[in-house]
Length: 435
Image 1 (cartoon, rainbow, N blue to C red):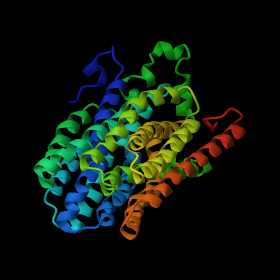
Image 2 (cartoon, helix red, strand yellow):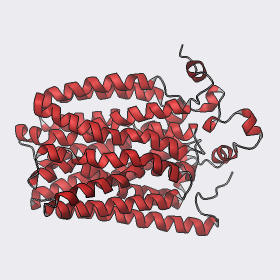
Image 3 (tube, helix red, strand yellow):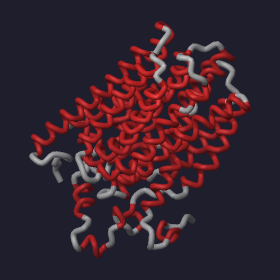
Image 4 (spheres, rainbow, N blue to C red):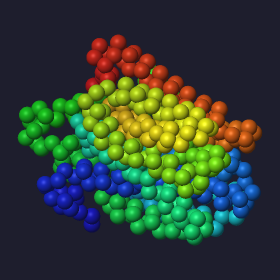
C-alpha cells in the first residue's frame, strides 16, 4: 500500500512542493523527447531514407493533434483519479516507442511512432497532467509553482538537443534513440510515485494552509477559486474560452516551428551543425532562468497583459532572427535567440494560470482538455506549412515571418480580452462568476 504524502515527507514540507519537483522532471522528459530531439535527427534520417523536410516534419504536426486528442481523453479523468496512473502509463509508452524509433525503416512507421504513439505518451506525463495537479495544490502561489515546474521544459532545451546531436554524430541515429529510451524510463517512473490528486484527499489544504489559518480567513482565495469553478459545459458557453483558445494557439505556433526548424534553417545559411544545435539551448537559458521571475510577476500583476508582452517579445524575436541569419550577423542572431527565450519562459505558466483563474480548479482538467483540440489544432499546421514552404521556395524566411506575426496577433487578442474583462467586471482579471 502506498504511503500518504504526510507519511512520506512528514509535516514540515508542504507536499505540493514535491509535486513541483516531479513536474519539473516529467516535463523535462515529455517535451524534450517529443519536441526538442527531432531537429537533431532530421538531416541524418532524411539523408538515409530520402524523405523531404515536410514529410519528416509532418510527425510533429500529427503530434500536436495527438497531444490535443490524448489530453481531451484523459482531462476529466485527471480530475477524478489524479495524474499518477497516467504518468506511469506514459513513461512506459514513451520508453518503448523511443526504442521502436531505432528500428524505423519507412515513413509511415516514423509518422506512427513519432507522431502518434510517442506524443500520446508525452501527453500523459506532460504539461496538462502537471499543470492540472499543481492548479489544485496551489492557488495563491499558483503562478510561482507552475513556473518552477515548467523550468523542466526549458532545461530540456538546454540539455536534450545538444546531447541528442552529440549522440547522433558519434553513435548514429539508431543507437541514439535506444539511449534516449533508457534515460526516459529511469527518470520518469520514480516521479510517477510522487504525484497526488489534490491536497484535500490527504487532509491538507491548497498552498499549505493550516486549519488555524483557514479559520483566520487566510484561505479565502482558495475557497473562492473552488466556488466559482466552471464545468466543461459552462466554460464552453463563455466567449472567453474561445478567445483564449485562439490566442494561445497562435502563440504556440512559432515555438513548435522554431524547435524543429532551427537546425536546418541555420545549416542552410552556412552555420555548422554544432552552432545550429546550440541555438535552441541558447534560447532555453533565458527561458529557464526567467520562469521564476515570470512566476512572481504572475502572482502580483495581470497575467493577461503579461502574456501579451511575452507574445510580442517572441514574435518580434522570430522576425529579428530571420533577418539576422539572412545577413549572417552572428551577434544579432545570438541576441535574437536570447530575447526569444525570455518570451518562451512565460508562455506555459502564464497560460495555465489564466485558465485556472478564469475557470477555477475543481474541473480544471476537464476544461483544459476541451481547449486542447482547438489550440493545438491551430499550432499543428505550423511545422508542416513552414516545411512545405521550404520545399517550394527553398528558404524559410517568409514562412517564419508569418509565424512571428501570429504571435503579434495573439498579443492583440489577449489585450482586447483583458480590456473587455475589465470593463465587464469593473475590476479586471479574473472575471466574476456565479457561485
